[in-house]
Length: 231
Image (cartoon, rainbow, N blue to C red; front, side, top):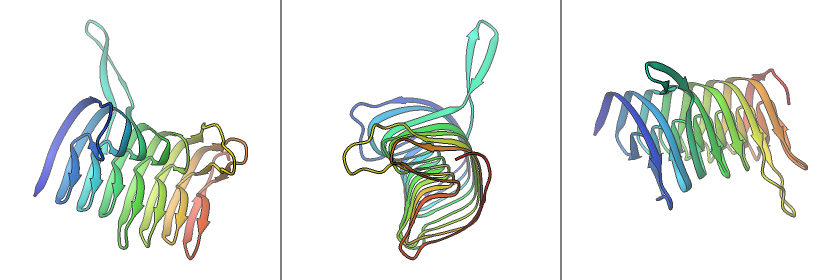
C-alpha cells in the first residue's frame, strides 16, 4: 500500500512497548511519500522505534520529522524539536531500516540504549539504502550512537547525508564494554558510507570510541566522508 501527503502530530507513551513503534506506522511494507510527523514519543522498552515508522522493509521518501508546537500561555505558541525515545533500534525517521529511506529531514532529539541514530537506529540488510538525508539535533544514550545511524551493517549503503548534531553516550560503563559514537555512524560493519558530512560535537565516556564520521569501521566496510566540529 501507499501513504502520501500526510501531516501528523502525535504524542505516544507506551510501557511496555511492542517490537515496533512508529509515529505514523509501526511496520511499513509499502511506500510512505511526502509524510510529515511532529512527534513526542516515549517507548523506553521499544525495539524498533521511529518518528515515522518503527520498522521499514519498503520505501520511505520525502519524510520529515519536524518541530512540535505548544502553547506557553493563552494565544502564545512556541515550538520544540520532536523527541523519540526507545530501548534499541531508535531513529528519527525509522527505528530499524531493511528497505529504502530517501530525501528525509529530521529536527529532533533521539535517545536509545542500543543502535540509536538521528535518521535510523539500525540500517541492516543487503541492499538497504539511506540516501539524501539530513539530521539536526541530538542523539544520546548508550552505544552505538550516530548522527545519521547507530549501526550501518550487512552490506547496507548510506550515501549523501548531512549531520549537524550533538552525539553523546552518557551510559555508565560496565566491565569489558566500549561506548561507540560517530558523527555519521556509530559502527560501520561490512557496509558503505559515501558522500556524507558531519559537524557538531561527538563524545563518549571512559573507554569510549568516538569518531567525527564513524566510531568504529569494521570488516570490509568503507567510509568516504568529511567531518568538522569537535570530538
